Length: 168
Image (cartoon, rainbow, N blue to C red; front, side, top):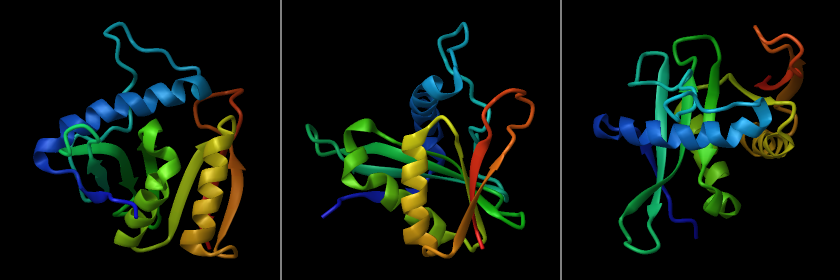
């Protein structure tokens, strides 16, 4: 059985989200051609500093294998809470637990906390994300409950289009 605790980021955990965000951007670096800035950190655009009426963030926790203390193994950022459509703006899971179903459990938990309709975007050059999000959409929304389309990336001429999954 998957032992995972998913909860909103608490006031004292926003720095934890910031550290994990660097892992997220590191993973995306190969897809988007990203480099760290002079201070050694990747960009933080999209990283919330706190919850707002439009944005929520969640951490997934699992016992650390050496200490049994809670260890953060993933996060999700949701935006559009005050808009017509919610979106999973970012989702990251530690590589060592990716095959354990943590990503699917985290994404399902997050969409169940907020009303539909939903959208999820992923980069064209990230085939693993495409497989993950399509399988997720089938489970979360039903095989006929979502559509996928490609859209240009705003402000990035020549970039491959992003893929958008949206609920019907």
